[in-house]
Image 1 (cartoon, rainbow, N blue to C red):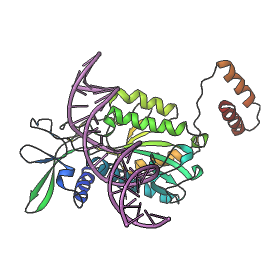
Image 2 (image 1 turned 90 degrees about the vertical axis):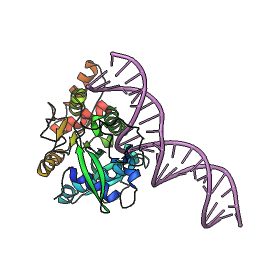
Image 3 (image 1 turned 180 degrees about the horizontal axis):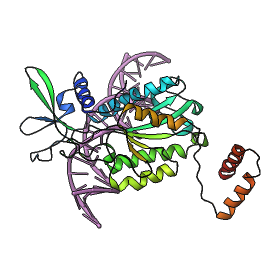
Image 4 (image 1 turned 60 degrees about the vertical axis):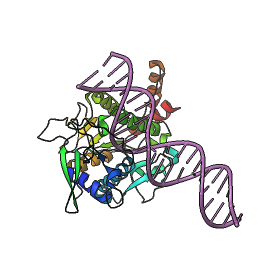
Length: 292
DNA sequence: ACGGACACCTGGAGATACTC
DNA sequence: GAGTATCTCCAGGTGTCCGT
């Protein structure tokens, strides 16, 4: 059974990355030669700026997300695929989908074989110190994200904006993308200033959810948001909860639509669409007219 | 204290230039 | 021509500064 994001995953990231990366590529080195994942809030010494870890953690969290979604995919005879390219819906080689659930196990995909898209925005959440003890390296957790200077994952406004921008880019690429759900996967809560926005994005159908797969982002039972009012953001606390939300996304095919029309024009469209006999044909006609 | 804007650097991919 | 070196562009996450 795949596991959600925990401290163990972060230990796993650092220890497995140590097989090919130096401590200096993974940690900040303090004045007194300690190795930190982030600068502790209390640290007053001179600081360096680490860049070499960025793409490593990006790749690790995307792989983690593939593993997390693979059970669900397999259950339906689908595949969780990393780095999916589909030019028709704005997923170029340069800006591929972090993870997608597809009918085939290929990175190059046709729109009709893509069932869901996931944008992964995850960070190292806790602070860690690397300690060498008799040639064995150990990681000591120094505290949660309130104790270090970093602002991980979806707590950063620009990370939120990047995720939103990428989703809009897909929505405006082609109508064939209209039926594909888009979910942002994170491992932190979001800030209060985005509560209303994620609910609006959710209600408007642009993004089908911001999901944090970190059940306990704060130590000592620290309070953090479980979900926003309309569930645009949800914290997922165990695998079955994740599975349930994934199933909900595919129970009935849905269509994204949007427009800017006068009430007069909209009324006419509804009137014409209503002349169809079957209920789904009415919808089909409505979508066609609104997109013309 | 916080959010937004911008800077930072690295590695990979693709394009272009150079060498034989 | 093929093979290799160099350049250009981009996204990854995180640090920092400024204005409120």
